[in-house]
Length: 278
Image (tube, rainbow, N blue to C red; front, side):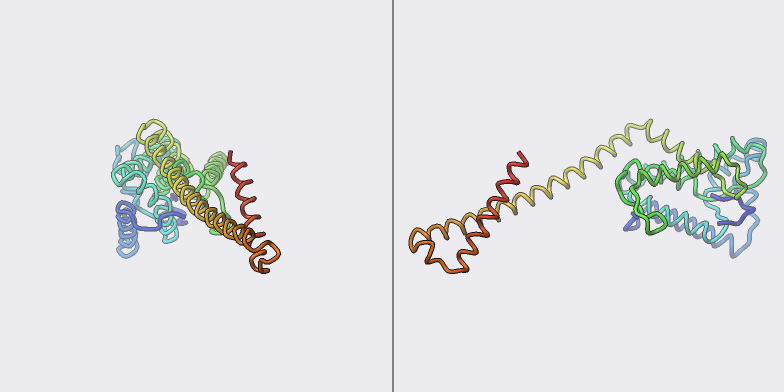
């Protein structure tokens, strides 16, 4: 999210319905802004003074769909796709859209409260995007995100890092044209919303259960393959022992002796692994 005067500017593997629609809407509005040069920022951007004194409440929604430059809209839409796709798959489209709008509107409200006398428009979807970032970190805390595209970091630490940075920037009152209160507001409203809804706890539990089921399925396949291998080794040892009883150890070929030694070694390893598991 950025102040208009500055003009400043892994994840979703497939397009989910709401994410796709939101990206198309934001992209189309940005193109119209650039091509037609319509003077809509002052009316549809979030102007705290107008919201409080002229009851321009529609701005709490419309500001989310306006952007101040190509990099601004591109970064927000990339983050929407990256975090939003997995969240929408986990929650469903209806709940995802509800959360997106609530965090975006909530971010706008907090920005209005902390900048009540400001007449500078704030625009961008970043408040809702920060809400999605928080939800992603809570739903998929151990998923790895590439910070700056090359530094691997677990999602939960990624969220903490960005929240801390926004908090510091908010306290420093930097004039960088970025609405840091709105960013923090999106995360705060998202946290309150998610913690207060049994729905989120149910979805989180389901996600954890599915992961556990997946791990158990892999373990079952591994154990089944292991038992098959173990049976084959035992059959090999039985065959070689039968050969020894008939012709004697000294009459085994060099290859048969090597096979017997290797099979005996593998049986000992399997036996040690079984003891460790018990």
